[in-house]
Length: 179
Ligand code: AR6
Image (cartoon, rainbow, N blue to C red; front, side):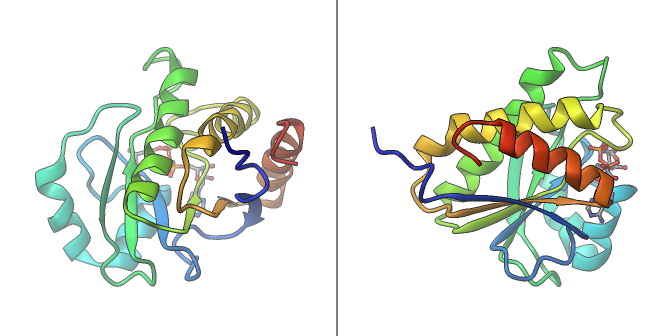
């Protein structure tokens, strides 16, 4: 098996997921109906315009752990990948469902021949997933998926605050192969 850890860059930055113009795809922390909401979903739908919700309508509903891909409309990216994260303490096992979001989003990006994808911290807002636990789960899921990737070369995590960035950066460094 080829070692992909050297050829895929995993990075963490502070910022707004809806303002990552150098990424082929950005990931939405969606609701099951794929409609505009608060937080990440509000920022992405707000920047993309109402045509994004129109494109999403026939793809809904989705289940926790699932991911679907659409165009990006007025956003500067090629695609939006919509993931439904688990509601912490409700959708179980939440660690497996969160890991599936990461796997499924990365596979979709790769199947579409994309080189770069940016994730927010799925489930850690309205859905209540503790940030430190989520950071460990997602970094392990990334490490587990690297060998499957053929076109994705940059995986970026965009955190809203400097404190959240420090937690994700520490989880990235703790995951062997991503340091
Ligand atoms: N850029 C980057 N990170 C952000 C942004 C942004 N613009 N806005 C918020 N965050 P959330 P969830 C952070 O609630 O927990 C929605 O209403 C935020 O600080 O957006 O998966 C949907 O419609 C937090 O750390 O997503 C769903 O119903 C993280 O992104 C539900 O909320 C995720 O927060 C999804 O909940």
